[in-house]
Length: 274
Image (cartoon, rainbow, N blue to C red; front, side, top):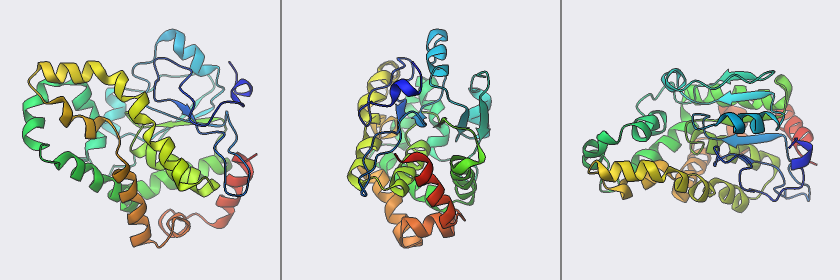
């Protein structure tokens, strides 16, 4: 399978790589001016910790030339990205200024079911939802997030070779915001942006059944993990609301928060729209 062969997929099509269930091509979403996002150019995914050897070859066949790793330094050290021939990996630590944020510590929940009692005590009563909603607001405001996303969009605008892939740990929060901003800047409707975002619940969450089962076996309430390992519409709503409150519009967030001028927006549209 080559990047060319993926050019006629439906928007949000299921991952072609079984061990990367939350991988998806951001192509083929329609835009307000009647164009479509080019397929085979930008992929969002979770980390590569579950990638099998045979699926690694399938990933390489996508033709990706740049991988943006939005995780923290500790996440990268614990689960380094694989090295692919001819692929540049760029670390962009979105949450460097908020190391206690749940998305930066998801590997604890994925790898350590013995934390069940602690999670039960600390994240019951809607506390997980509140904490992650707060993280989404901070993703809009944190200086480290501004630095990371500025470099990400500069890369997409020609500083780095395409096709590209970007990811965090589960490919839903830091990655979700990057995808939401990109699609919005390209002119994709808010409804479709949310559709792409919420696909994580049907792609990733079922693949994490062993995590939920192990958590339950350790005495935890699996329902407490759903807001942590899945996504909710209110999370992304919170980020967009923070943009409106702090900057007035996504265009002003792009300009004043990320420090990117209109030439970057124009280049992104020229590069990634058919």
